[in-house]
Length: 455
Ligand SMILES: Cc1ncc(COP(=O)(O)O)c(C=O)c1O
Image 1: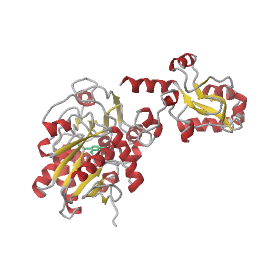
Image 2: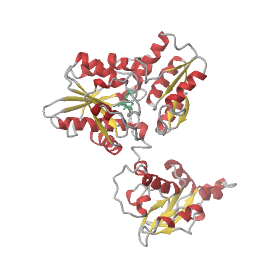
Image 3: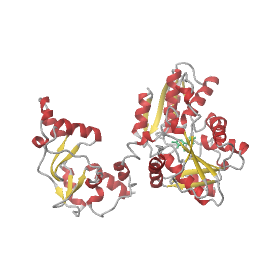
Image 4: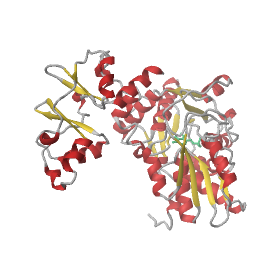
């Protein structure tokens, strides 16, 4: 055990774990735990090398500004390095990325510009085009551009690859990777071609990304959309060498989020959503083999960054990714069904401070008031505000004194059109019948439902 002099020295040399609780056919499956890097992802590695190289090449001057387009993890890595070395950092991040990543990056002092995730390369608001424009506008700035920076694959060729081969004691038959900037696939592909030429490179790709078709059939297709973060592409980056890849698997979001959860439940490893994609592809590859093989994949980042998304059932349900029983009626629109324990409630006997704290904690603006399993009222932010305004001592008031009791109860079988007039009056729908309360439907729940059925 040694003492590090800088957090940057703690990047890399990540552990390798053998998985024991998945059906891997005749194969052994290992994961390299890149989530253990100080910034929480594999991208810490390239942040160090790309900045070091830019310094050596005179592309960054003291007091300068580093600019990058990033799905978040490269930004976190760059944030670590920029803070240690005294550079300013501006990051352009697409708006599908998890709020945890964005808060983390902002807390490191970076200037974060959120941009659209529904536009493609060539559009001025596409994150890479936006970053390139900023680099032209901001004096003494340097655009890292991980998608065409040769130090990105070089990092994996000279560091990650040798680490993996040493940990596997030279015995590795397949390496399963995702492609974001493609630094990992290109760098590891080059390394294994030289040092373990029988090791197959296998691509794990989200459904919607263009890369699976490129690898398997050499065909360029139109990109779709996907929710897994950090991997999948709508173009082929200039540093990407797909000739190094033997086979690709397209993995759906649903499968990825399911396996991300299983990785935590079965192996105790909290990885990001891409860990689910990589694990799903690795398991498929393993199960297809007829002879024993040693297969390695990555946990590219930590699941802590996804607590509000993949580890949040209400979010998964909003995205249509949770296997829930469907009823074909209004119950299917309820984000937090009463019988799942997911619903947040207060009793009429609770006080306003408790109600306020619960709303803040779960980021909701109204709560059903439940006594002995029955809805007896509804309380929202305006009820609390009017209850306490000018009388702060009223935070001790009971919910029963301010709650609304004139409730709009709709039976589950009611037509969807019957709830719209409620929203026009800024109300919410309480779905219940004579003896059962099912949950609430808010405006955002209806929007989510319409969005899901529109796709
Ligand atoms: C979260 C995340 N970021 C990035 C990558 C890929 O890295 P690269 O940009 O080197 O292609 C992966 C690969 O699985 C990943 O899971």
